[in-house]
Amino acid sequence: MNDTGWPHVLNETLSRMLMLLAGVRELPEEAEGVIARDPGLTFIILERHSQLPGQGASELPTLASCLTELGAPLLKSLLMETLREHLRDPAAGQPDPQGLRQAHIAARMATGLAEALFYPRPHEAGLTGLLYNPTQLSEISSVERLADRVDAWGYDSFLGDALRYQHLPTDTLDDAATLVRIAAAAHTLLYGPEFRAVEDAGRLTGLPSALIERLRDETLLSEPPAAGNGYGTERLVRDLSLYAFVEGCSHVPAGPRTRLLDQLSDHLRLMFGLHHALLLEPDQDESRLGVTNLGKGSEPDLALRAQGGHLAAQALREGVPLFLEDAGRASSVLDKQLLHWARAEAMLAVPTPAGGPRRILLAFTDRERLRGLTGDTPYLARLLALAMPRQAAAEHDAAAGENWHALARRVVHEINNPLGIIKNYMAILRVKLGENPAIDEELRIIHEELDRVARITWQLVGASPSAVSPSQEIDLNALLEELIRVSEPGMMAHKQVHLDTRLDPDLPALSIDRDRAKQLLLNLLLNAIEASPPAATVTLETHRVVGMRKDSHLEVLITNSGHPMRPDVLARLFDPQESDKGNGHAGLGLSIVKSLALELNADVNCRSYNGLTTFQVLLPLT
Figure (tube, rainbow, N blue to C red):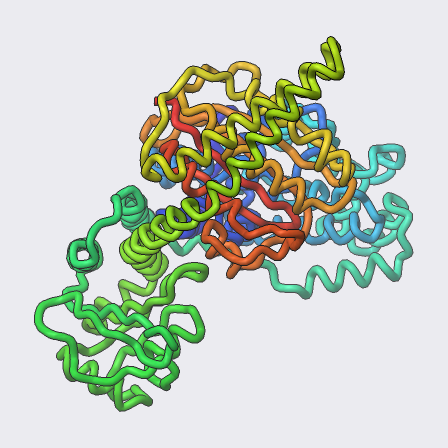
């Protein structure tokens, strides 16, 4: 492959990313750590991010911010593209494990020097070490050509020069940019003549020799991530098939519990060769585990305590898969009884991922088959999460819908009476103020919003939650700009929140119920403003996105800073609940958002990470 080719990515990285992304809509936190250990995939992510609209001519972003902006759907697409390039020629560009280990050490050395110098972007320094040796890490043939590729990203950064010049004699770099000198100092500490390396690094950075020696020794003694590439192509192809299977299951609609159980049983048998498995679910007070047989026959007549010492209870407590290869090694009599009941040699207990309903898959097999399943547990866990919680969610939605309808009937009459009075006084006020174009526009907005409130309340009592008003062609950007005008005089002025808008000017028209779309987006925008600290920034973005199945959506991203949401809060984010905002808030806003999204056939997702909370709205273009 020539110098415009695809950087090589380790089999192990590709396999681990397949496991992390199978069936998910939000990027797991572990993704950044997996990618950061692989120079090839790190390079691909950064290069792809530079091609997003609005990138370039700014600071080189961190890997974490790149992943946040790319999002799970685009990262999945990029991973598939990387896999295709890799499988086209799996023997090409296999990196030297020692060279990869040196890259990790160089990255840590450069990062340490940058932090000691209080360099504002230490992640750039780390990249100078990680990406420096392309002949071992990719199919780009030279450092010079790699630097040219980095320069083409268009960022206001000296990363390209740091890659290009760090190997030069140190006495030629005294006046170079700070990042170049940091990279050269790290390079000479690792590869230069030992008798003068500390002296040269000190001249380049201005740091004391004692500090440089300590940093070098700590870096060399610390153990970098394992640099092996033990995943063969055969294993990678298997992971790809499991990924595709679990990803497909994530799009299967919910159904009756019996049908979901039958589907789960079939999946376990066909894809994983598990002909005998139990689904264990804690009861309401989490003292006992209910048992459902996913194979043939009846459930074992055994009492399973959720807090016991048996394998399933341990997996439930620890949240990680556990294995038992031999009944003779079992410390629990219950585990021995279960193996005897199943007539099996070994068993594994796989819990659902954190954040959803707690369940355990207890599967029985032979020792040889168990060893082959150890790498499949992430897929089993995700399959279990996808297969069963949707039923619970569907039942919960039905109950919540009934409660909301009853609540609406109680409050709608109390809302419509003051609305009529307000509109009458608005008409009187317009006459008293006389002609004034600026005031007329503000009164028009107020009058229109009052009419919208009246229509919303009518829909709550006069139509079923699933009824959809006639759609109309709207300009999404214009709708958002209207919402900004409504929000700005009140919430933004009070909290001095700055609104950063990044609206794609080339969006197509959207056919949708305007009132519902407006209510959904206004709820999210006001929530973001309320959750922001004073003088913070709320970012509002629009994009057109295309999914893997070629379905096209308009995307709205609303991001605010502040305290990240706890996992338990995220798990019930769209449920009616008590609000912690005070001042009369009923905690209903996001539940209303969920109902509106269902009516619009839209999708609303939330991620809260590293001090930023982003709500993503996907509005279908079909």
